[in-house]
Image (cartoon, rainbow, N blue to C red; front, side):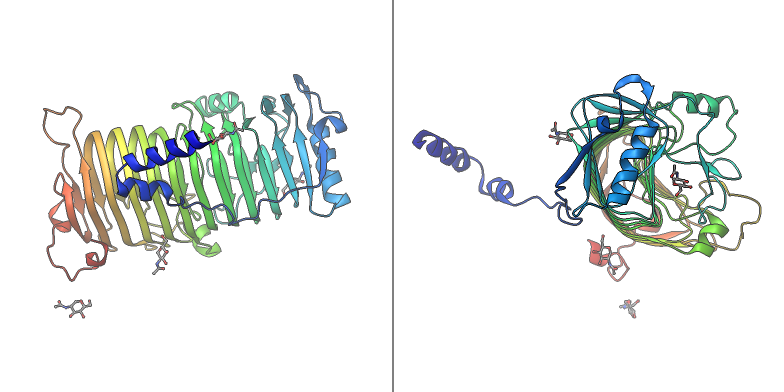
Length: 449
Ligand SMILES: *[C@@H]1O[C@H](CO)[C@@H](O)[C@H](O)[C@H]1NC(C)=O
Ligand SMILES: *[C@@H]1O[C@H](CO)[C@@H](O)[C@H](O)[C@H]1NC(C)=O
Ligand SMILES: *[C@@H]1O[C@H](CO)[C@@H](O)[C@H](O)[C@H]1NC(C)=O
Ligand SMILES: *[C@@H]1O[C@H](CO)[C@@H](O)[C@H](O)[C@H]1NC(C)=O
C-alpha cells in the first residue's frame, strides 16, 4: 500500500505542472443531461420466445416484449435484456420508459427480406421521402412520441444488413426512401450508449423533432462506398449531445439538419444547442457537417476535439437557394485531420430540391461560423467558401488553422477560394482569401481571436 502511494506521488511529481493540472481536471461530458435510469423490472427477449440462432425471425418476440412494457407500465420502467446471440427481426417500435440492453455478443439483425418492410408517411419538414417521392420505409428500430428510452449494454451490435438496400439504390430499383437504422421522432430524454451500429441501409441514427438526446460511447461502421450511410443526423432537434464515439461510414459522420426547402420552411423547427465532442472517424464525405437541409434553421452548435482520418472533407457547412432558414453561431474547434481532399468548405450551392415548387428567393442566412484550432496534414486543398450573391455569408471567422500539403517538401496545400463572404482571420496557413484578410479589429470576428 505504501509503495502504491509513493509511486502515485512519483508519477504526478514527474509530469509538468500544466499537464498535472490537466490530468486532474474533470473532463467535460454530457453525462447527467438525461438521467441514466436504473430499472428494477427486467425481462429477457427469450421470455417472449426470442431465439438467437441468426435464422429464426424474432419480430413477434420484440413486439410482445415491448407491448408488455407499454401496457404493464412497471414503476421506474423496464429493461429488455438481449442475451448473447444473433436475433434476426423485422423492423419494430420502441415505447417509453424502457431500456433496450444488449449484452456483450448480442446482435439485433435486420431481415434482408425487404418486401414486407413497413412504410410510413414522409416527414412533414421534408414533404416527401429524402430519396424518392412519397412515403418512406420505417427505420429498423423506430420510435415516435416516446420519452425516457435508453439503448445501451455491453457493446452489443445493431446490424442493418444494408447491403441489399445499397444494391437496390445502385441498381435504381428502390421504390421508396431507404430506412434509417434507428429513428426517434417527437421524442425526448433519450440515451444511446455503448452500442455498435453497423451496415445501416441509409442514415444510421436520426433523431428528428426531439429534445434532450445523448449519444455517447457508440461505434458506427459502414463501408466507405455504402451510399448515404450518415453516422448521426440531429434534425429539427434541440439539446443533443454526441460524444466519445468512433464513426466510419460512407457519408457525413455527423450532420446537423432541419428540413428541406418549402416543407422545412413551413414546418419551421430549427436544430439548436447541439454539442459534438471527442469524435474520431473517417469518411469519403465530411467529418462535421451542417446541412444541406437547414430550412428550419440551425443555431448554437459546438463541435470540439474531433479527429479525422482519410476524409473527403474535414468540415462542411452546406446550404442552397430555396432552403431559406439560417445557419448561425456555429463553433468548431480543436480539429485534427489527416489525409483529406479538402479541409474546410462553406457553400451555398449544395444539395438538390424536393420538387420544383421550391422558392428560388428563399435564401438562407449564414452568419457567425467560428472555426479555430485546426491542424491538418496531407490536406490537398485548404478551403472553399462560397456565399450567395444576394445573401453573402457574414461573420466567417477562422483562427489558428494550419493545413499542410500531402508532401512535406512539396508546395503548401493549395489555397483558399472565396466569394460573397465577409469575416476575418488570424494565424491561418496557408493564408486565406482576401475577403477574410481584413485587419480591421472592429469586425464581427474580433471577439473570436
Ligand atoms: C410503429 O410506429 C409507426 C409510426 O409511429 C406506426 O405507423 C406503426 O403502426 C407502428 N407499428 C407497430 C407494429 O405498432
Ligand atoms: C464499449 O465501448 C466503449 C466505446 O468504445 C468503451 O468506452 C467501453 O469501455 C466498452 N464497454 C465495454 C463493457 O466493453
Ligand atoms: C452560441 O452557441 C454556444 C454553444 O456553442 C452557446 O453557448 C452560446 O450561448 C450561443 N450564443 C448565443 C448568442 O446564442
Ligand atoms: C465599430 O462597429 C460598430 C458596430 O458595427 C459601429 O457602430 C462603430 O462605428 C464601429 N467603429 C469603428 C471605429 O469603425
